[in-house]
Image 1 (tube, helix red, strand yellow):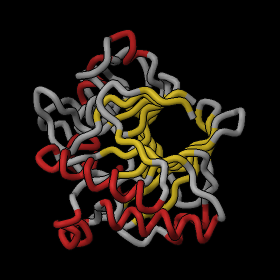
Image 2 (cartoon, one colour):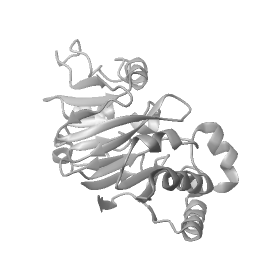
Image 3 (cartoon, rainbow, N blue to C red):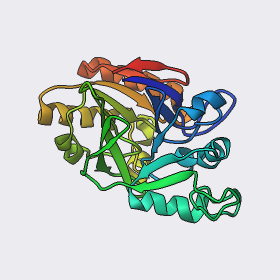
Image 4 (cartoon, rainbow, N blue to C red):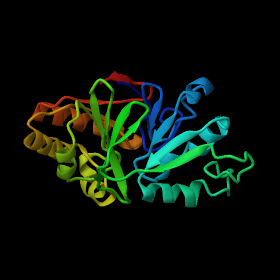
Length: 256
């Protein structure tokens, strides 16, 4: 699987983009920057979008993607609570047409809202998707995504500490994890359902204890004003615990 990171931050600016990444150019995970970072032809290749939860920085580009692709159908897959947020707040016809409803001016739906059930795998475009519950400020899912050749990655989505239950359900070759706050804001991270470098180190230690190995790890979802602090602390944690941790940036590509 080739992973292309479009956005890796919690806030948008000239140099930072909201969270989104592509798998093999056809499967999108999160919708923060799906239109601002892709050409029209690249957008047209996306057939399915996985959403971990309903916060704005993860769903923002859905209406504009639908507007740009009104000639076809795109699956939007998420747990029911996330789809309810979309329907009530973003796809309600108030600011944009409701692209998930055949009653829009297009007389057809562009976005097909597909509910996912925790721990029930589903096949999508040749990938096996397993939604796993994680701890966040609102109901949220992580995703284990397996390719046809058996390569697996796990994306935590936005999550706070205590991922032990999630680790028991998965067997990834690569981990994409969130990293929102520096260590000095560890309590804020916990209170809001996020990770900091020292809590990530604890979670990775639990992973190794439970699974008997550690996958390589790539981090995203940085708060821009804390990014340099986070990078320094992640580097220290990686060295101290002998971990392989990379920090992604916009445009970064990795192979899993």
